[in-house]
Amino acid sequence: MIRDWEIERVRLLVDRSGVVPLVEAEMRRRGTGRLSSVTLRDWFVCEVLTAIHGQNLHSSEVRRMFTDLKESTLAAQFLVGTRIPTSDVLEGDRIVSVSPFETRLRTMNERLSFLQSSAPDITPEEAMRREALQQEISYRLLRATRPIDLPDTRAMAADSTAVEAWGQFRIGGNDPDARPGYRTPKLGERSVFHGHAYFVFSSVDRDGVRPAVAAPRLFEQLVVRPANVEGGVGIPVLPFALRAAAEGRLQELLLDSAWFNTSFEDFFAPLQEAGVRVIIPPKASMKRITVRADGTPMFFAVPLCPGTPQEMIDLARTLKQPAAMTLEPGFTEQELDELARMADQELDAAELVLPDDADQEIHLAEDDEEYEQPVGSTPDEDSERWWRKVRKLSWPERREHIKRRKHKVYEDTIQFIEASEKVKAYALTRKESATAENGWQERWECGAKSGLLRCPRIPESMLIDPADRPTVLPCDTGFCAQTRPADGRDKDVRDGTIPLGTPVYVTSLRLDRNERPKVRSKHFPGTLAWIKDVTRRSRVEGDFGVLKSQSGSGLTKGYFAVGGQAAHVILGTIVLAARNMKNIEAWLARGGETADPLYAPEPVLQGFGELTVAQAAQVRRSHLDRTDQQAA
Image (cartoon, rainbow, N blue to C red; front, side, top):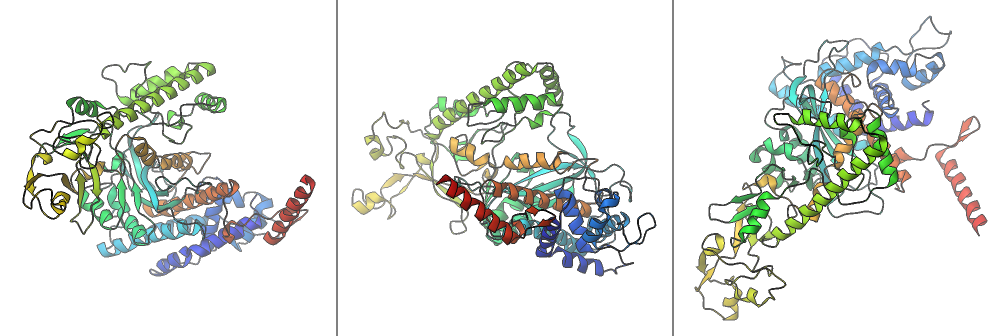
């Protein structure tokens, strides 16, 4: 049942966003055609309410919710304000037809499309204008869901998910904008799909910040493209990232390894110049150790001392990143029961989520100590074989099996952290980040100069107790093998220890911003701080799971039944807006506070009437006063 206060709340959201006049102005550019019995404002209200209540987000479902039952005709009339005479209801009643809703969706899709497949006759300038308009609609509606007094975290995670095309769209046939593309397959999925790629920005906590009441995870922007994204996945999302940076809402952008196929000049350099730090966890298959032309070894993108022992180089080269990283070793009985129940309900393995702060998925095909992958089998076949094996187990056996996997991943993570800490002891110290003032170069200082190592080339470092710092043997390669004449920068010259011009060893190294830029992070790779930092990005994966589940928002094939990119942008944004409102309600239930009237407490039913917000607050205060008196 949809109550009156819900309708008014969604109307306030739509009015505050300003999307209605924006779209109406676009619709009038080519003439309005025949007048529709459903206003554009009421259309948005109906669709948002449909998404909030978890129904199939398709125009035909609006009739099922509001008009199929005779008892709901008055609610439908109040909601959409239509006046359509019919003969199959009592005199005086009016019913909403599904046709105006489908017509609205089809018309908006036609007039907002900018791709050659759906709008082949428009000019490139018109295509750019329509693309910007689509992004403005998504921006305004999602921004309106944020409470007015909730500060921005200035940190976002961006990721993409595959949404398969509706095979036979009811009105226009096959989706003209859908294309075949590749995705990371999970159990029961193929790596090739036909449809659209949804790029979503989601707000996350800033690195190292743990508020008393965790801020709600909100969707900030949606960008939709056909599955085969041209130019790399970073190109479609760059305009919003630059806009958010200019507004002071984005300083850290967390991505996953799929963004490696975007060139540095086209994506990373503009963000860096806008003041955005891009954080990407290194791929598990990447080379951990590389050697620069001067002989300096690098661990991912962190330069190491040229005198690093060979056993440390070998350790870094063979360091194995766990399939999933967790920071908590324990299980509760409730969590085990839930995992066993999920496994029994034919749910795919992607929903076996680690129940801890890391929030990482267990990749069932990797690091399974009880299963050896047959020669010649693919990862998909291996995962399916493992899943069939687990499904034959009883509940207690499944619980024990998952528990062993959990502890194995935890042990692998601890080993990963310990090995990384050993390598970290030989890393150079970053003294300057890349900025426009220093020519976009990072400056790294010798570990012995920073007091982290003992090296004969730095006499003062040899005064440190050998038990406190490792000792390196200098070699004839690497940046520190070079010399330069001492000048005013040297402390020894200022102290009068050595004369001006005395040859001294080079103790700092400069890295250009385009030297391995996509594997750089704020913290040393593999350390505890690095794991906590990059696992913030994994939260968007959990949001995708809710969006695509039929119990959530149904952003899947056959459930999100629309065709055309513009329709995907509009209805997809509505799905995200509905999810934002639910996340904020959950945040308020956890103890969050906001004075935004959009999230005022729902009126309390009292008999046949409803209390206003002020009356409900008075009742709550009276109840608390009585409770305090009884406690006293």
